[in-house]
Length: 269
Image (cartoon, rainbow, N blue to C red; front, side, top):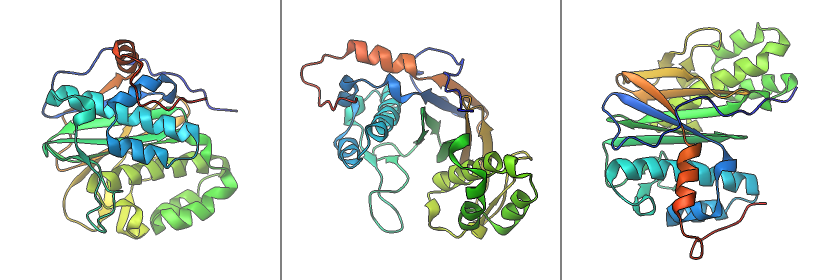
């Protein structure tokens, strides 16, 4: 049965004037909330990245994530969204595919993820944060074994192999988003070997069991929309609170305010 893509029943208000210390904001949106006039919120680098994507759906997802992040960060810093300087330089190779960071404010951190009809943006003051979301039905039972061999640590694969076949796709997806959230928070990316990061399996509370650095990392599962699983991670001490917000009204309100004729738009079918 196909997943049901619904909007979560979270508060429908705009962003706080400034993110609060110890509070992580998690903003949820759908690509369908994007309108051509949202292009005015994007930076030049966003537009370049989007132009490289072949599929309209991928371009829509990128636009939604970038627009929400820039709206929330811009409100926090009293800066027009398009004027925020976001640096994606990889610390390992210098290419523009690293963990995104604000070039002009090292104290406010954020992370973006999207899958299918779901887009999520996490914003946290003080320490790096990583968020990841994935559709549960993306992987078939007969695909999971090969994927696990490439992506999971030995003990994670062993746990997965003991599960009944119908349960493996969801369990693998939970392990995947937990690992991805941690790797986004640490900035290590997928270049590390699977056994250098071990997280708890889907049947147990989220926790990092082993990683190559002694720096503490916290890990949470998120209440994602139906048909998805998601995880949130960060360095140091876990936030005091995680606040979920619906970004749809924020995007629609921004779209109504925008003027149309000068937008750098790329219409989506």
